[in-house]
Image (cartoon, rainbow, N blue to C red; front, side, top):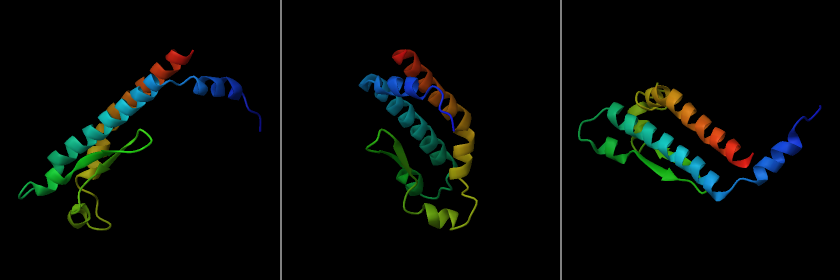
Length: 112
């Protein structure tokens, strides 16, 4: 197996600054918020408590966790089609990918 450009990539990764990491964290937060917002709209509602339980939680590594609440498995069932999670993920996929690509593009420009 031949490695090509590995040393250059390692040098670029060493140049990642806190500002670049903040851009990645912002992109992750915006992606998670977008998923959570759409899931709140799509979740079956009677009282609104299930929609209110959907939240995003920051992870230690700059990522985000989308918590769909305690009753998510009850609403969806164990092997159900996930009526509000999967549609929210699918509907936001293009925007999330574009946001991630922009963060990566900005990071590469900053370290070159």
